[in-house]
View 1: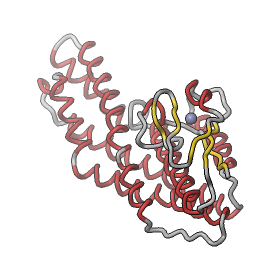
View 2: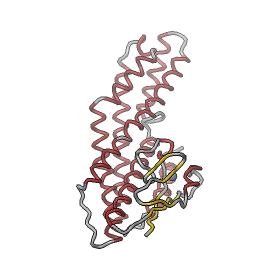
View 3: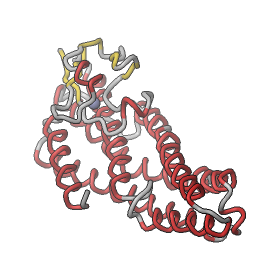
View 4: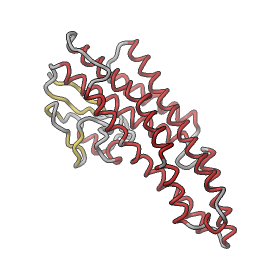
Length: 275
Ligand SMILES: [Zn+2]
């Protein structure tokens, strides 16, 4: 899909999602800005990761470049190394925690003008930790995709030299962002998953701090790409401190980082407060 088409689809979905949060004009503008910044930070980070991986692969000898165990080792070294772990955590903190705080504050004060929202509250600190847990899961998906592409290249080569050349080509292509786990498409997926988690997590915390919301209701995103499990969850109403049951999992809110990738990646569902 062309970059522009993808952007248009993303924009339409994001508009739906932001509309459901019922924000003031100023909040909405700030939220849109945060969204974009988050997406850009993730895109930059994936680009760096792709380049680092490619540099390591290009340096491998013919023999090692055609050895999938060795390739797997290189991928994990890049991903699990402190450098990228730290970078990812920083992006989560800088780009997505403001979403949590903004959604929380606007909900808490919108419901109860006496409510207080502190940026450094305990719930926010706890949530930041939960959010960071999404990073390894996201990394696993990209490692799997990368190794499958490498294995395909190894399978296609007839001689060791040919295998090494093919592997190095796959690596170069992935680093250029044309396909594979480091492209814009994936940056959008990662950014959206984290932003849904942050915005809904903040919303829920805001309701708790308002002291007036008793229950919450799941609202499935209304489009063709909505998962069956989430369509079925539409309208489900539970106590504010209890989890929703969605596709056999317990989720405190749409995008709950405690859920599996299957239930949260790119989820655009929201919640409604019940008084
Ligand atoms: Zn959903």
